[in-house]
Length: 142
Image (cartoon, rainbow, N blue to C red):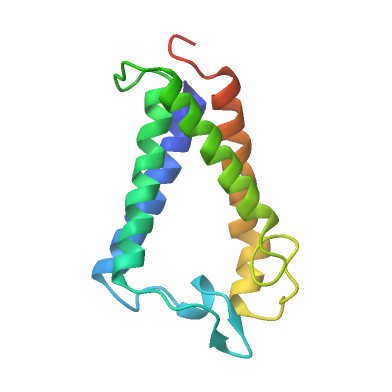
């Protein structure tokens, strides 16, 4: 259960960070949170995308708590499947797109790339491992 609570806390913290960015545009250094090539962002984000990410991260936290029974859910297969999805998604994010994000990115000379290698991708590995653990062993009552 401790793994689920810590993982949910990480998800809620990340969701809160995205909500803060939503209400304080520009509070995050764009070069540190958006991949770039030759100083230009390779994708554009806006308030809708930021809100969606915040909501998905909060939902991920809830799924972790459902998985171990902290929150009531009548169908145990659904939170278990949800945690498997989280594990796969975050493992995939750690591997990356082989261009701008993940451990196997080719563009490595940007602020984002340095943060991605040092912080974002390792965090994704930790999240994926915790989610795999929850999916395999984290049922209610354990």
